[in-house]
Image 1: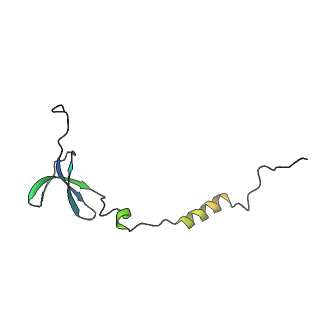
Image 2: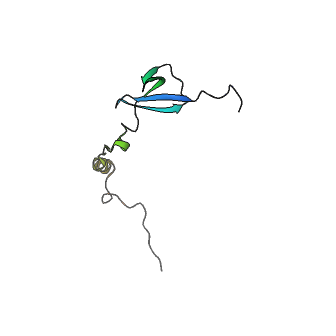
Image 3: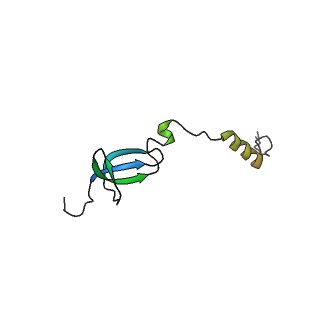
Length: 93
């Protein structure tokens, strides 16, 4: 590999601000912040969502009001019973 063209791959602490969860991994992300973690100083990256706070991983999924959306659509555009046929087919023998 050529020297001087690759980013520095090092250990970095990611801090999930919403759940106050910190984890250590390796990354090339550049940051000026540092943190004391498990007795050593590491670069710090602050994030909003991680597996500890994301609804998919925590099981706290938010259900959408799909029935309300369907009713709103039908109210705005009508239902199938109220629709007029656009074309008719006749069979000629």
